[in-house]
Image (cartoon, rainbow, N blue to C red; front, side, top):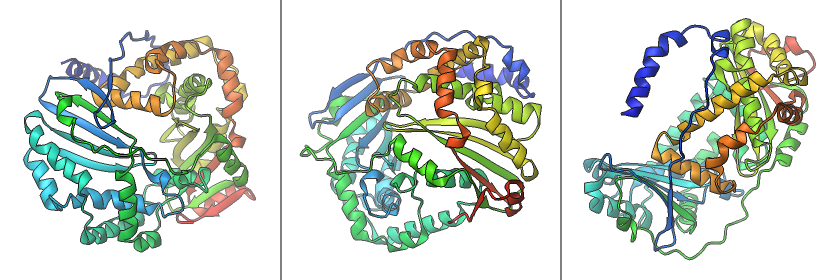
Length: 466
């Protein structure tokens, strides 16, 4: 009911927010929202699996995510394409007891949904089902883990689908620009490796079976479960696996990323594509999630580019000058490193002016001139947005697991708002000088080759698949 009221309120106010904002939004004073972080129950399954749960009996539905801590980063020197091909083929192959269509059709018949995702850090199997069908659905899912079935014919279908995906992945300028920026920033790592058609064709069934076996034998697992569940029903779901020793997977650190930035130099990387809307990206290095500067970086990012119409990027580049369709920034914090990306979409003839303004808006001159009023407004907005971390129980559990994975301090979620409130103007100046420097970022532009005339002698021309 509360969510429905919130949606109705937003709809009622939407005519106000459909106008150009800027000064209108800037003058609105919003007090910090008061709310309590939901209590999460943590326990250990008889098989040793760590369980995180939030009970909600409003509807007779159960939502479960099974996290297996074996993912792309454990591939080592093997082709990164193995993970994606396994993900798609495994999901459609079912189990030996319920092969191929029979597996999905059985789940669908009982109103259950299911998906597999092989991510960088781990493999995630997601499941939802009606509580009354639990005794039927869980054995079907057990067979997926205990008797997997990779089908050769489905492998061919998957390869064809991914090949076509590669053929189309350069259609969107912003997606292309972000991919090329990431390839440069994470060069030499699995995280910075994009799929190639020749590698897809060469992946064998034996390679997929080997990687699948390594995933299924990984003992570090977690179960995230919400809804109207009964944990006793899951007591016998998991096998008692011997404790595995993690292989030497790659470790990405800020120093590795900074070395890549240095290797790229200060030249602009122009990815040539005949488009009218040019995409501009500046990507830089941040420290790990569990770093004292995390909170100040979040506040400064909100003020400069992450705050939508409240940010300098949208106000100065889009609203006041009309130079961009969109402009902003975002941060990504991981266990051992972080990144920040400033971006804008503009007409090709405006690319030079927009890039110049993007750099100007993160100069010490602007950051050092920020006021207490701007700081307070940003802190209040971040604190109020924090409530959406808990808008549904699954997201709440994911936030807690992320805290633990990233070795964040106990009580991180409960204390987040207090830490944001502690941020000062001096903190913003300090982190601005450390991390918001355009000469320590990789600049990537997607646009026509004619843009080289704007920056003579300082442009490295690339093709989308270079």
